[in-house]
Length: 284
Image 1 (cartoon, rainbow, N blue to C red):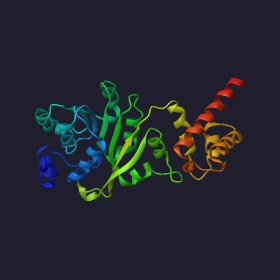
Image 2: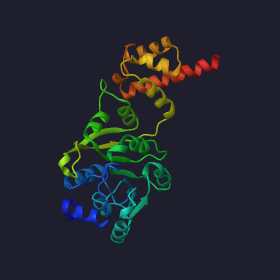
Image 3: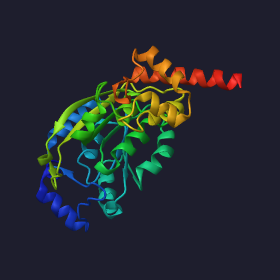
Image 4: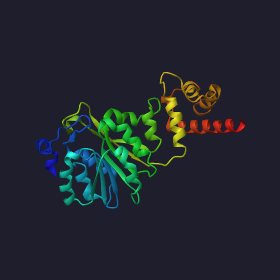
């Protein structure tokens, strides 16, 4: 297992399977064991767990997880390494590799999982936001999510009111998120241009009115320079005075901007806007 952290061994594997680390797929291979240990610790893995992984590559995370869980389902888009994984699955029969795009194929496989599951993944940078949204919007929610992402993205995700973004709202709406480990760019081969961080998302909740929540939140963040009442009123064609009234009630300030609200305040705003819609439509 230790050899998989060796750049020389990784170069050999790439040559053997005619593979050049792809910027398109965000293929930067971990050459440090500490981030893997941090992810496994944050995952609180047990022998009863089923784990979903996205982008296993040569399996630095996959092969560390496999002995600790019941099953690991890994989605891999690079078919050049199919033969590599056929050999590994003989040694680790609880590894299932699904070939193709995880973002389009995950839902069908997740829905067939019996019992609860967790997600652990070193996400390719290019698909981070889409992957997180895909994971958290599943009808069958994961018990716990542990992801390695760009450090800058991780910091945006765990932001507090005053520095919120649509990404932060989208994650914190579903669960409690924190940074559990920072990973220097030198921990990868080839080294990316930026550092990474590991985030954990726990206490993941199924929410009511998800579609309405994100419709209003997206409208609210449409133009960060504008006050929130204007973004919502313009984006959803709602009476501006009613939105100001709602914001005054929730925040004590009708001139607040989208990035200043907490998730709890956003949920209250959505609830009151939804009630207004219901009353308005009923009276008309």
